[in-house]
Image (cartoon, rainbow, N blue to C red; front, side):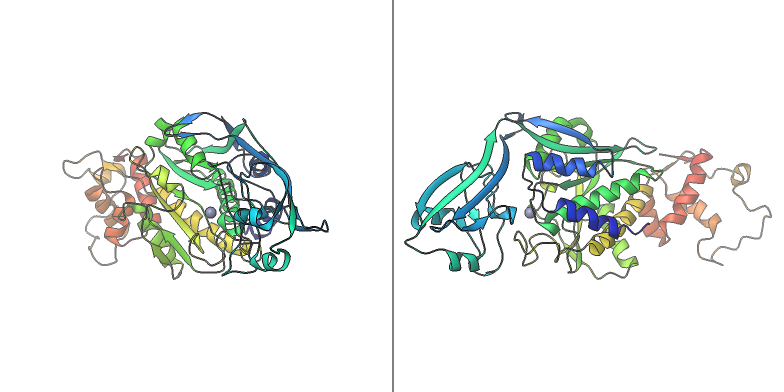
Length: 430
Ligand code: ZN
């Protein structure tokens, strides 16, 4: 695969400063920029729309926000970092003493140079986030502060990006990432950018399966999308949530809920093949949008491959999760792993032998070596003729090619080529 590192870097630089949330212009701008790479459809879900037990919230947009001291100096400034404002803060312009302001200030004593990331989506409130260093330096008990949040919270819509990549078969895999975080690089601008480049790569390939690629605001966006595409989503068996893929730390993957599902086995096989020492995070009910996709109604087996997984690194949900921490070359490396996993998933077809009663006459189908008697089983491990026999023996409509590959300890790519030949000769079928 082409090395996308320079292009990934360009898109990281452009997308990083954009203020994003679960709704708003920042999300639309992000998706518009991604449309340069892939032909995303933009879906809008209006505020007030009922989606299962949830309601699409009002749309939030923000122009400016700051706190000024008595001298008029901006001591907290949204223009310098969009993490300074609690996402979904309602507008305010007022003067107040520290005692009144204090409940609206968020900082981390244990990480004194980091601005934390905080949200208040479903409870109307306002707040500022700042480093503990800045808090100690700029705030005094008796001083009065001028506070401004120039935001708007009104009926609008929630924005989702969607791309359907058709393959030879209508059966789909789901690929989902979340676009709702503002200037945070690993969680999850890295996932957004990787997903766009992965989709761009898939569009160039001839695929067996189809791929439903979606860019949603986390939770509410995934729920709105599921509600709107319930029939299609119910047919999906497996997928990937792409998140936190660009950190300096170790690779790891969060398993889907069924540990034995091929998606988990394939991810582990790719790590092992590449000699990567990886961390396994067993399925857990916390996490990202797999919580929606794996819920009882859908039960999609969704895994995530990460490099510095969300929750697991010190800079998580702080301003230190920036473009110094999250690097384009790490995202490019993760992209290769995702691409390889998908290339195996895409070949993992479940065939059934169309002639289960005794063997088909292989010579009639031009599948038998021309000179009889020369075959001595076990002389070489699984020459092509053996593989044909094994495939006819095992392809029962239940064992997938990955199952067969594991059983025979033989590479899936070679098995796949032979299976496709047998399929073209109408000896096996899906
Ligand atoms: Zn997050």
